[in-house]
Length: 370
Ligand code: ADP
Image (cartoon, rainbow, N blue to C red; front, side, top):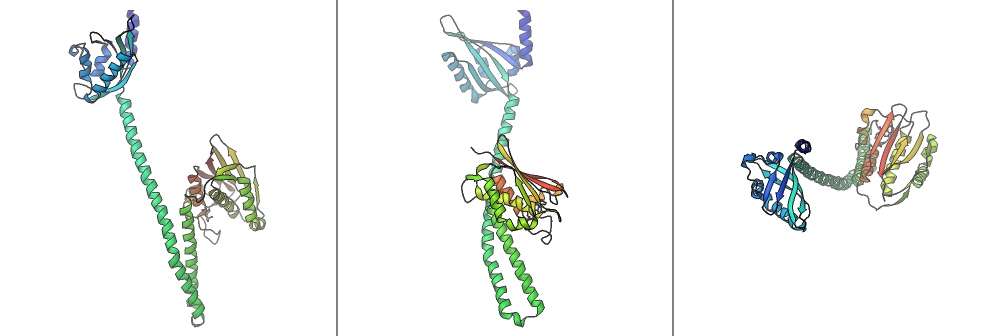
């Protein structure tokens, strides 16, 4: 018995667990050595009575914990609760208490035997986590709001900018039409530059509008067969494909429940780029693949084009960022930023791998919908 006792004591000490035994009828309470440590008191200052336990409890937790203890005694159900203990030095410690009710032969509850365990550390950790979570969700909410405001701003600004721009363009036209014979070569060249600038600005405004719309699809979800989307692309770009002698191959693609317009833009952007950024004298070869994973689909669009230096992997997904001037390869730098917005709106990710000079593979995922 002594050895068993010794082992039990060592084990409870190691686990920082105190054992208590409460005799209901005479309200007497027996604590083992660890219990005193958990309450920060000296065994000499403990009367061994129920109210000695009550004295250690935090005033805000006392009534609830005492009530729960009485409920256990009345119902015979296990005692299982948490409360704070205030040590004589006023520091606060969190305790987890458990106990089972013993009954006599007549079935009446006579004893409660249980444990106390100090859970201050995990409680503090839990509270820190809760606070962190709260501040994170406040930040996420702020971010969402400012994002929406920015989108709204881009939408309104690009709408409102169109009108004055139209005015600039049409008066430049008038100027050219009515006064061309009275203007010298230089003046006509200035008009040409101004008109060209207005045209480019119009394109930027249209791109901005497209970008701001990218995360709020106009229509709902529908079944979209990606093989059909691919066929549509091939039909639409028939001339370009034959001009460049491009080959586009794919494995059988899935049909997904998704936003058709967004999906079309993602696919078109990646395929357009795969054909556009090809090497001179090399026929573009584009391969499309779809792999079914546990919770998502992973798509890839692989080309044999000029490739991208890894240092630009992030840059190319930013609106208006391009790696070439418009004379080498046409474009405004909007495609990938819109594709990224669509993919992220649909709950997926987009990234790439590339071997500069050999080709690139763009990947994107889409979560499976039920
Ligand atoms: P745009 O094609 O109009 O420039 P994108 O946003 O689609 O706009 O692409 C941004 C830049 O990323 C391109 O200017 C190009 O430099 C690079 N890029 C995109 N796709 C490819 C590709 N498949 N191979 C090589 N470079 C690419």
